[in-house]
Length: 397
Image (cartoon, rainbow, N blue to C red; front, side):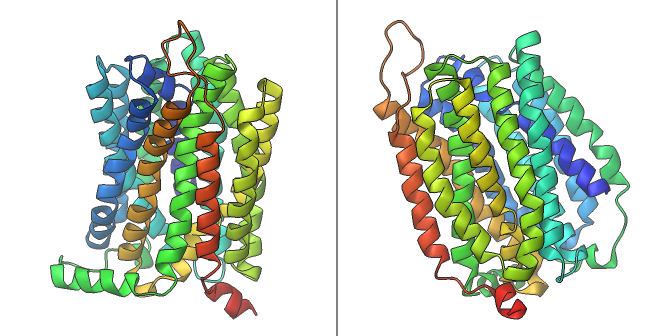
């Protein structure tokens, strides 16, 4: 229960800045590509530290690593909120990424070790559901804070919320399965473990599919949709936050039930359907003309994204069970590359294909091309995933 509460608070804070971050970055007079760099800088730091975080969680009490991560998140939020220039904002986002790596990687391993194999899909999807429950309320809350006070206010509220999350983390129960399993770091042993994880036949294909979903989350949901809603439709921060909240609500509707279903039918089918249907629904976004139509498309999008709930359980299933710290670190490192790639790649494509608007400071109106590029990448992820054997489906059958 405590872990779920902390997870909710972390994502509540993180998603509070989602509707305003692209506009906040653009307020430093930079183009869409550099706006994407702000989004990606968080993921760059997280990607670089996911593997070290996994190794640290193998040596030290995972609760200590999670608490340190929360301290970094709170500190970075204050720095972002008072940033005097673009470079400081980038630095704050990288510190935030480091904190996220420490917290999320350790928390994922902690949960994977204590939930048991039989109900892994159900419990890990519930964990993902708490992540998304935080993202349901965060965008609306953050958007309204920005409208009521100023665009920096959500960052300061984020700092308070992640600071509060330290309390339930400190009192997480001890578990013999979640205690440190190795007293020392051995480079040779670590490299051997990495090779063992990477040689698992299904690990890389499944992780690649998740990478594409991460690219979608930051490239489309966190970058293109807020910019499109603001620049193409003229919506304010509060309204954009409400739209993202609607998507979060519909995702929460499907994400936990599909985890329970995946314990019976396997993880591959839900994730494959998610990739395929998402490739279709995002192509409708650039054709919408108002709040209602964008909210409707994002509501359907949210329902579909919820089908990806068992993805972390899928990676756990195909990993060597005695090397979960290493496999979770590698999984998050590889999939976080999607976080890095999405905003920069799609921001760059949006810059190249935008329709300029005379007198406006932004790069122009966003068209269909960046959404089409994402759709193609989702289809590639679907094709790769179809080559994977699903151990859970095999055992259920």
